[in-house]
Length: 188
Image (cartoon, rainbow, N blue to C red):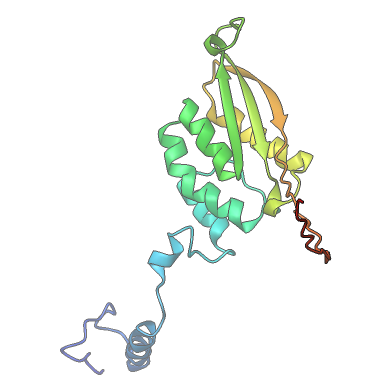
């Protein structure tokens, strides 16, 4: 029976065979070659997209769709901790909508004229949609579901969808040659 090298720690028992000890030495050298990208796996910006659903689960993202654009997925993971910390507040509702790439305006019951019913609010949501296109009905439903999970439990809301339009104005100019002659008059 061959004893392990003095400078190499081992987890094998004294009764281990020489084959087992050789395998341990080879695997110790090989394991040092395996890259360990822990920092990039826990960063929503650098995490590989295939691993992102597990990172989302780890940080507590409650709703997840595979058909969301990568930008929305990464943003949802980034904002998850803040949303959980502030859950039940207006700020958390704003943060959830921002993670979907939307803009929000919230009018609570005491801010409306006439005053609304207590513990109600109006949610005006403007989404540019997935990847900058039009927001589909299922995407809007996903946003509303997340608002329902995040808002205060006692509160109810009415939903108004805004439209985000972009337009451009073109200025067209036409140039044309003009001939003119100078007339000199003298008064007599």
